[in-house]
Length: 480
Image (cartoon, rainbow, N blue to C red; front, side, top):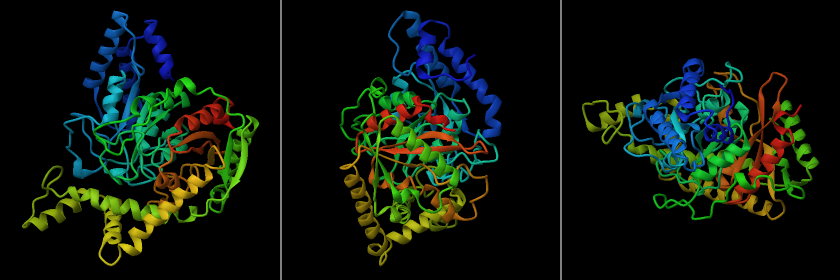
């Protein structure tokens, strides 16, 4: 059976009856059985659901009815996104036995579009991390190099697609958790504008930052999945009622004449030399397609990491207060109510989650709120203004995705600050709320993928995807 399927090739095979959705689903579970033990990309599989979905698609084929847009496409879902009756642990012991009673909107839209949901993928606990080493269920390994991290926090979703264990997957991005693992695993990975995709059913880390988005092997497949999950949702008041274009159908618009901003703040100290070389070659390739480079100054970029780790941890402190052993999730008995709280949260949460809760609680505490949280929100507004002003001069912004290729497992776990700095090029777009994609941009001499990041103005996902697609078609994924 074909090793690398795409959405369009699956559709063609189904319509020509060369393949059934059930056969394809069976093949993907067999792939998982062969490789997941070494990768730890999936935490839970859902064969009953997957085969029921496959049979529905095969029934449509048998009746000669039109197929929905993702008919028969095997997909994986990050384990912070609710799936009815399927374990949804957030990579945490505190939700070890949790099975939601409902699907997230993004999941129900995939189901309605004919996708086959294979199961749930590993992630940093409550999406807090940049390496998928913070999962209570063990780290995920990068399929490109098993001694390396796949990035985080959506490392399982990235690894599943990169290893051919799913055709597409959903991850979440709070400060880079879709784009960075996409870069480190060598696949396209997209977050839309904040509010473009419903967050209903997403278990919150930082509510003003969290976004759901797709991974796939091609930009066209990313576009196809985004078109399915995007759009207004009455269950999420932050989901914007903007019209969703048919992204995949409009990818081939010419990019000649588009002005691409190159912010000098993203090319300073601390970037790996090979990353710089590949990203600069990627920019040259875009120039060869007729794009016009424009140097930008985005003065508040240097404050992004500090701002992000105050805003995000403050929101995490508030959101994770619900895990107290009373209402749902883990409960560890104690002599008093307070003792039960302490024991439940002490045993249920890992070290990184505890660290972020404490940082956030401190930032929100009396006497420190104005000095930290309020000031961070003001700087966040300045970072967003940098993007608004930049997009008055350019059509898109091009940067590295990560300052380094995939690092070794265990290399940064003892130094949280170094781990946080892995998000230095991604948190800016997260704070501003703009859409962004990471696409492969060649490999280092060691064979490790490098990612190139493209930001666009609010709700201009189509422009971002068109640039990414043009880059892919011109050979940008394998820049020498």
